[in-house]
Length: 308
Image (cartoon, rainbow, N blue to C red; front, top):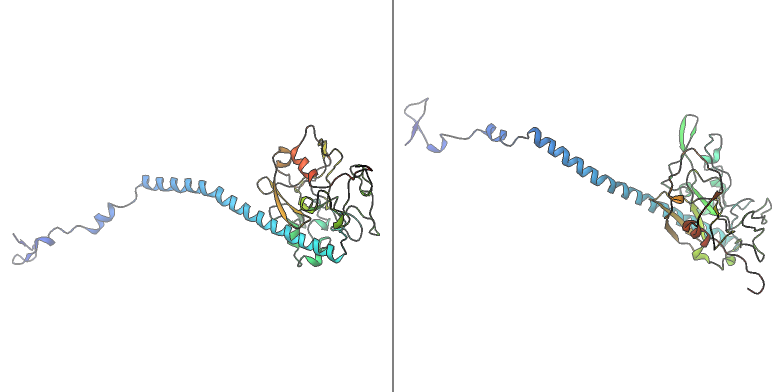
């Protein structure tokens, strides 16, 4: 039966238009309540808690990849220098051909901390580095120094193994190593110092590391000492420490040109470095340490005596 309009008694409206639903009532039925909002916020918080560690790991992995790239570039520079120097290695400390001069600390007056022109750009490797001072520092190294009210990043976190190139005097000639009962590292009963690529017979270029990153509270000069005195039986002490910036890993580059990641397994090398501190060395050990043994195994060997 047709329904008459209240405005016009004579008119009629189709039954289908008599009870049209109100749009605002429909909207109210789908509005968020306070409980809905709280549940949504809780879900977002849970997702954030799950994803943030993943993002952190991805960021750390990216820094480690960049660090490995730095090592490869340094090794290219080192090998190019060696080839152009007729197989002679740069000294790891001292003399006109030392790979790096200066020492790091946290004193603002020490320009070696924050000015790459002081030491890095004077390195004999610099002409082969593509004028890139950034490759001398691990991107995960957070160390800084305060200079005239400004916070400046320190410029280096990488050192060279003491047995690679050895010590040198002002004339460039070898000096006493001063570690592991070794003088010049060329006589039977001494641990070998590598002055030329041809000297790397044992353990060989693929198993002898050249560059290693040090933690910010251990690095000083560019001379990374691995004491061999008790090799291979025991590990009585450790002089210089490798870093653990990459989730407990450290990066190394080897004399054959490859770069490698080493994961530490003992608390000694996994300890978080302290800022604004330079620790004393060596550190005495009370038990055999497999991480220290690994360093020794990838450093040098005893020169055998007659009949060996």
